[in-house]
Image (cartoon, rainbow, N blue to C red; front, top):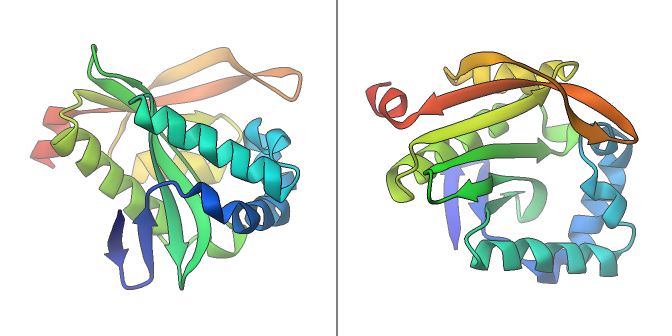
Length: 180
């Protein structure tokens, strides 16, 4: 499945066959991504990238996640999606990352709008959250720009690189999305 979000980029479902391209993207952004995520440690070769993408695809098939690969001019430039899908309680959270060369172009904000529409309209979710490290200024601007409600800071909520980090919690409810 492919969805054109703008003339500049599209969203596609996870494709494990592009492991080499995914690895190249991760490798060129490794130091930056590793500051915010632990999964880049599992992607240290094209083969590991393909295995990682297969696990992501498997989680999709079990309705645990909904992932989108962000493409521009035929190349992958990032990923975003709904993680930790809780169908019983009709909630999930959005994650996102993009190649450093494509930051600041509104691609992540547009992608998140698409994911919000998908989550609220297609999956009929009631609540979608975004968690941001308290020192990730770029990431914090995304939920604020999209009209999410800041609920507070979760103290020492995520272990990353051996340290526990604080996370800012933002949320949006279905009725807030439909009324905006």
